[in-house]
Image 1 (cartoon, one colour):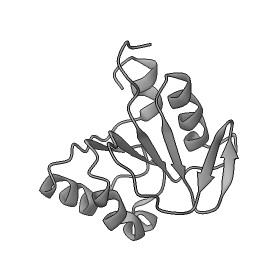
Image 2: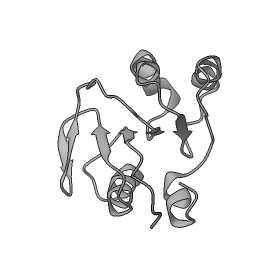
Image 3: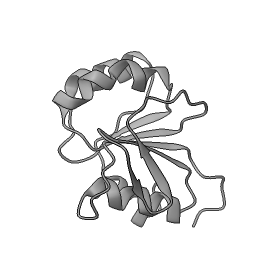
Image 4: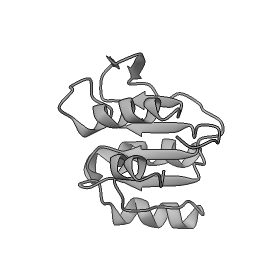
Length: 124
């Protein structure tokens, strides 16, 4: 585990179903000491982390990691940009050239990557 303070991460598309990658990501992020805000289509719980369907106002967001397809992302564009994250991670299956362009215009990093791989290889 890195010796820096955890990176506030918004998991967009969080699911309470243990077979979903977003569920694994929330668990691994918290195991690595990163504070997580889990946002899903409906409320639920992943371990000790509540999933909200709301769009909470947040400060100092390091990363928004996406677990929903490009079509579902559209309703979140304004919210994501309002968070002013340092980066938006497009996990496999979430690729979205339209949101990438918005991120570029806002000066936000926008890697096509896998949060779980980044965590397991110490690159998060």
